[in-house]
Amino acid sequence: MANRSYVRLEIDGALATLTIDRQDKLNALNAQVIAELHDAAREVRTTRDVRCLIVTGAGEKAFVAGADISEMKEMRLDQARAFAQAGHAAFDALEALPFPVIAAVNGFALGGGTELALACDFIYASEKAKFGQPEVKLGVIPGFGGTQRLLRRVGNAHARELIYTGAIIGADEALRIGLANRVLPHGELLSAARATAATIAQMGPLAVAEAKKVMREGEGRLLRDANALEIDGFAGCFETDDQKEGMQAFLEKRAAAFKAE
Image (cartoon, rainbow, N blue to C red; front, top):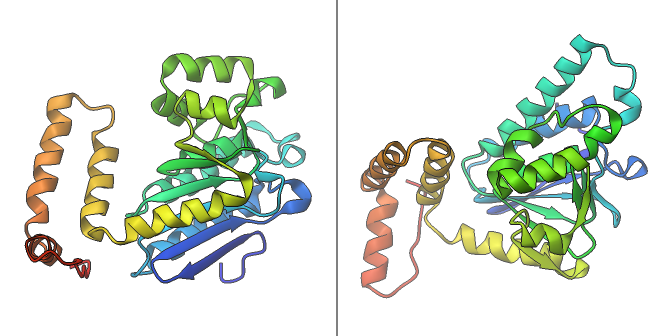
C-alpha cells in the first residue's frame, strides 16, 4: 500500500513515528485505517536502522477514539469476524516488531484505541488522555485484543472491572493501575516519548530485540520454561559482535558503537 490516506510513517534515523490521522472521525479505526496500520508495521519492520517506534494520534483530541461504529453497525457475523481478524493481524504485526514501540496517547483512547495502545510495549499518556473498553455499552465485547492484552497489562481484577462496566478512566487512574507508564503535560508528551526512544536507540539493538522476544514468548509460561528462554537468549547474545563491542566499550570507559551485528 504505497499511498496511505490515514496513517503517516515518518522515519528519522533510529526513530520512527506512526501517526493515525483521521481527525474528522477522531482517528477512529475503520477497515482502511486498519489495513494502513498493518502496511505501515510491515514497512517499518524492513527499515534496518529503526530502533524504536512511537505510535500517536493526529490533532489535539484523540489518539484513537475507537473503532468506526458507523461501519460496524450493519455487519453480519462473517463480516464482524473478518473485521476483528484484520484488527488482530494489524496489532499483532505492531506488537511483534523487533524493537520497542511506545504509545504516546494524546487524547481519547477508547475501545480500539486502548487496544492499539496495549499492542505497544508501554504507554506514555498526556494528562488529557482517556482510556476505556466501553464496547459492552454497544452490545459487543472488545474485538482487537482488549480482553486478553488488558488483563495481562493491569491484572484480572482491573481488566474485568473496566470491561464489564465500560468505564472510561483518566490518565492518573491509568497510571495507578499500571496501564500507563507515565503521565505528562500535554505539550511534553511527544518530546518525552522521543527522549526515551533516543535512550533505547543507544542500547545494543540485538540485545533489546532479544529481551523483547524473550519477554513476549515467556509471558504465560511456567516460570521454569520462561527462564529457559532467558538462558538461551542470554547465551545467544554472545554470538554477536554487539556483545563484544558493548563489553569492550565498558572496559575502555567509552560509548559503544553498536552495529546490530
